[in-house]
Amino acid sequence: DAKTTQPNSMESNEEEPVHLPCNHSTISGTDYIHWYRQLPSQGPEYVIHGLTSNVNNRMASLAIAEDRKSSTLILHRATWRDAAVYYCINSGGGADGLTFGKGTHLIIQP
Amino acid sequence: SQTIHQWPATLVQPVGSPLSLECTVEGTSNPNLYWYRQAAGRGLQLLFYSVGIGQISSEVPQNLSASRPQDRQFILSSKKLLLSDSGFYLCAWEGGMRTDTQYFGPGTRLTVL
Image (tube, rainbow over all chains, first blue to last red; front, side):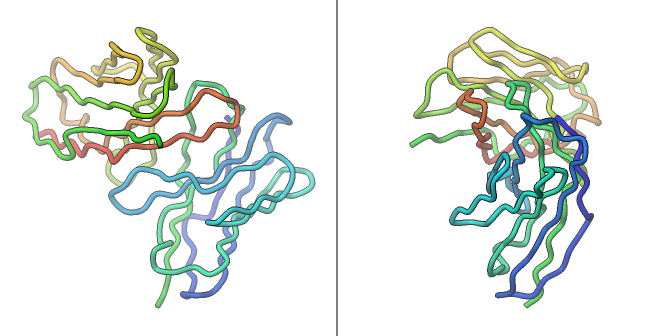
């Protein structure tokens, strides 16, 4: 899995949009971009994934740069329930598991 | 729908004692199964993965072992626990397709004293 770089932490206010960046300059052409999040004392939870095109689901949107060397996870209206560590992972889809970095600790201010 | 179970939820064990953590998946067949560990304040570390019954791949050499006696059962074991084995142990499954996501269980918090 290619290495990803994320800010250690970010703060946002409730009900405002949050843009979480991720750099993955060594991503291969066949790697998918996955985002997971981990709430306190819980296992990671899948958020969204994409390959080249921007993706939307009920949880978030994923904006992928044209050169695929970076991506941004967008939470449209963050609430306190979204406070978690967000992990950006590049994966080639093999069975050998995911490589989790340190992620971004998202803090939501009331 | 698919569900993943882990037990126990918490465990306190003395150094040198054995360990057995169990993970089972319902609602799917022939899943890829994974054991991860998260030490306090650290990221997740992949320990073992399995693509089928009796097939185990180890990512990190240590005093832990894994077994897959049934298609949807994954067991993490140790003969003698070390202090450094303390952590949050997570089991996960995926369907095996290239774009499949991993689904994690609730985890077992192990404290070795």
